[in-house]
Image (cartoon, rainbow, N blue to C red):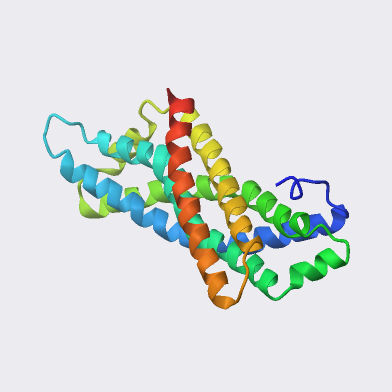
Length: 233
């Protein structure tokens, strides 16, 4: 990590690589995050509706529950677990392939800090783009919940919108953004570590990718507990 977070030798190259990683890691993740968010928003709305059929519960509770579930947990933690599978395996396999084909050794021979050159742009790109994915997930998830609620007839549009607005706490968005930044930092660093220290052949690169995803997921869940206690207690 000390080698990774040294000042890049050429800032122009670092900037170029960061933009490339934003496209490869961030923009390519928009579709999967959007698809999963709209369906999760719909599922949360429908399940909440069928679990609050008692007439003593006001209908706007469905929108409120969908909002808080998406903001507090889904759009940060669940999205991070999705990114751990997509982004983590991508990073680990890419760097691992470079290690076993001796491309990293070639960079070192040329006097280039390979850890800084390969890993820092990935961390920077992921940390910069992850908040956008989280905000997008919140909006699309709420939209998916609205579509599900209206199409199934469990509530009216006015009731859902009122539930979204009811007792809204803006800090929940800040809380989600803090979590996703820390989560993607864990994903990129853990995945880069497993890829950087891959040795052997293609099978070993595959094992490193699997370890990267598993370890990233475990640390995401662990830090989710820690951050929830620190930020919401």
